[in-house]
Length: 393
Picture 1 (cartoon, one colour):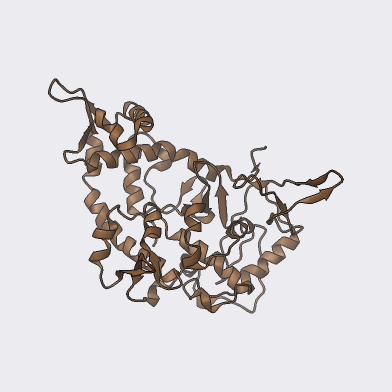
Picture 2 (picture 1 turned 90 degrees about the vertical axis):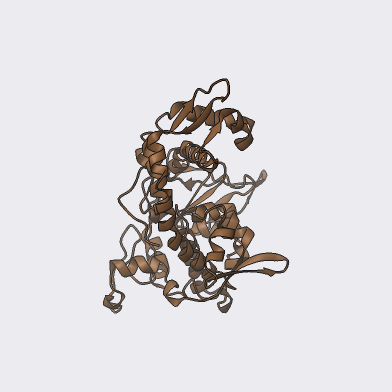
């Protein structure tokens, strides 16, 4: 295995081969006959080391932020070390103890006394950052409400099971108690109703001003739609990008060298118009190329609504019915490797929206991520520190 590629390990029993000569790596399950019987022919999947690195970089920060949340959730803003096991379990306790010992700039350990056992609280600098949590929540709330409305508008019936939303709540930035704190505060937008024995979050009012995708917004900011010259032929560049109202930002993986046939095919696909991801998917024939391109737009928009523009493959799978996603979702993602990237680093396979990252750094960060970055900056995590960019939701 070299540094630029890896064998796709999402399912060890699926072997993938290209079905299109010169069209990058489009992967299908296939076996070839030989004199020795059925012998699989393996193919490599291009690897993006910088995005794999994101999963490695998040391990310690996730422990730090989880411990901060545990401490902040306590009545007196500290937790006895003996009680840490009750919160995180016996095995994880030792990982957290190592974090406490290493990052004294964030955590302060009280030695305790005969009446009070050892405890951990935030350091003075960390407490000062934590004191601004109220401001951060106020700044995040309109973003969360807007994104939750857009998420419901993406679904075919403008409703999603509450358990599905809970499943991706942390990716959306929703607070743990969003069902009792956020949703009841906006009865003009949301309601909870039971459908087929399950509680669903319903959209109360459709807002056309929200039915603009992140892709369309990016294009509108870069160039006024009315200024496009449709009659003039513009050659597509070697990086696969094309300036047009129906084009996606393409980021080829390192080592990927598309030939002219592939670029011509990509140019036709980039120019092809397609229905908005906010239109009901039931209106379109799934076999129509325009409908297939619309599926890419739905996945693009779905990932754009998350804080870090990434989601596990399991979380994406949970929304098959709500968004009418294709049964072969993995093949769709792999086919469009210039837009999405799947990494197997970490506990679960994760799907990235590639354009949202510059190397290993998320380009635009919401107030909640900026706030978390301030904690992490205390321990010298420059890669996780505050960015000068603000997210545009």
